Each structure stands twice: as structure tokens, then as C-alpha cells.
Amino acid sequence: MRSAPLAFATRHPRLGAALGAIAISQSSPLAKLSGGSPAVVTLFRGTVALPFLALLARREGHAPAQRDRLLAIAAGGLFALDLQCFHISIPLLGVALATVVPNAQVFIVGLFAAFAGERTPGRAIVAIPFALLGLVMLARIVDPFSGGAVSTEIVSAGSDPALGVLWGIGAATFYGLYLVITRRISTASSAVGPFTMLRDSALGTIAVSLLIAAVGGSLLPPQIWPGVGWLVLLALMSQVLGYPLINASIPHLPSVVGSVLLFVQPQMTLVAGVVIFGEIPTPGQLLGALILFAGVLVAARK
Image 1 (cartoon, helix red, strand yellow):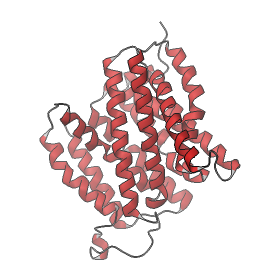
Image 2 (spheres, helix red, strand yellow):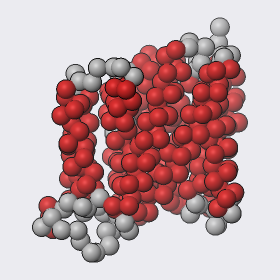
Image 3 (cartoon, one colour):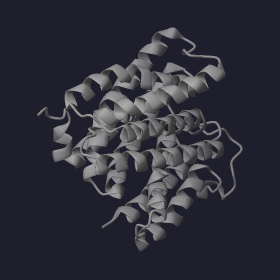
């Protein structure tokens, strides 16, 4: 019997999820460096990663059922929409804050779980106002450091934070749906390994992003080099390394615990945003990010 390439991630799920979060933490900086449109960035993420994922899936030796493959492809289409929203939000919010907002998927996943009949812990309900307050502060609708009024100045970390938060919420919604489907596949079938599922998911991502890119009239970044180089590096770090680690780890963790571990990602992205682009969020936005994070911690606390 062949061993899964990421068997250690199943044995040490917290470490696997943390390493995966670090690997994908540079997604938004690399996307911005490439200069490609959101659809082009998403298309490259799926296309470049697919051969590697197919090879690793073959090593897993799993033969998923047709239903599981179709669900994974559908999840990949949702993931493409998640990335589309996420990449649109990057110039609006800045690379770091654009990474923070989609982590509100913790509450999206909880909402879907409640609809499925799972009991919603009281602490999760208490945490919702914290999350909402954090989001409006990230959007600069409320800014305690400017008398509560929206500033007319351009934020150094993004050009339109309010619009960026809306796109970020869209990303959180699509990513929440993606997690619900992939988690169901992983827990319902032992014949689906992380790379097998990601290989099939990549097909859905490629199909949806190719359609969006074709409608937009561009399948390449404005500058072929180094734009393509940044996109290849992005695909390898996120789709080949980061997300497989996360997908191998998350099924062995409670949903909210895994989501908290993924908050390693925005911390690393914040550093990259400051160092590479000189993006400095306002004090109110940083406070909003901390409040949002606190809300997630409250929801995840045992």
C-alpha cells in the first residue's frame, strides 16, 4: 500500500496546518507582483499546479468515486470564485488586510453547519458582533482614531477599503462553501487523499477562471517576464505545497481550530506588505484586524 505524501500532516495536523498557512501567506504579494488580472492569476494557480497535483495524486494510489470527483470539481469552481474576489480586493485593501477579511469564513462555515443541524455554541454567537465590528473598522466605516468619520485620504495600504471588505466577504463566502464540500469529501470517504481531491478541484478552478479570463480578453499578465515567473512561484507555494498541507491536516482538527491556525497567514502577509510594498494599514484598521481575530478566537475556544 502506498503511503500518502503528506502522512506526517495527518499525524501532526496542527503543524501541518501551520506550515500550510505560512506557505500560502505570500499569495497576495506574489499576485500583486505579477501584475496579472484576478482571473489570470487564478488560471495560472490552477494550470501550473495541475501536473504536480496529478503526479502526487498518482502516488497516493486512490481511486475516488465519480460522485466524489464531481463534488471536488464543483468545489474547485467555488475556489476559483473565492480567488477572483480575493484578488480583486488586494489593491483595494492592501495585501495584508485583503488576507485578513476572508478568514471570516469561520463564521460562514459555522452558519452552514447550523443549517445542517449542528448545534451552534453560544460563544460563537457572542463572537459575531466582534467580527462585524472588526470588519467595519477594516473598511474604515468606523475609525476611532479619526473621530469616527470616514477619512477622505487615500489609505496607504489600499485605495478603497470599504469596497475591498465587500469583495473580501465574497471571498470568505465562496471559501466557506469550498471548505464545507472538501471537508465532507474527506470525512465521508477514506478513498480520497488530499492530492487526489486537489487534482480534481484544480480542474474546476481552471474551467471557471479560464471562462472569466476569456471574457476579460486576457490570458497572460501584462509583462510576460517576470510576471509569469511570479505566477509560477505562487502556484507552487500555494497550490502544490500550502493547500495540500492544509487539506491533509484540517480533517483531523475541529473546524474552528483549523481556522484559527490559518491566522498565521495574515501575520506573515502583513510583514511582506510592509517590506515589499511599503503598505502600512491605519491604526484603526490594525485594531479592527485584532478585533476580528479576537472574535474568531472566542468562537474557537473550547
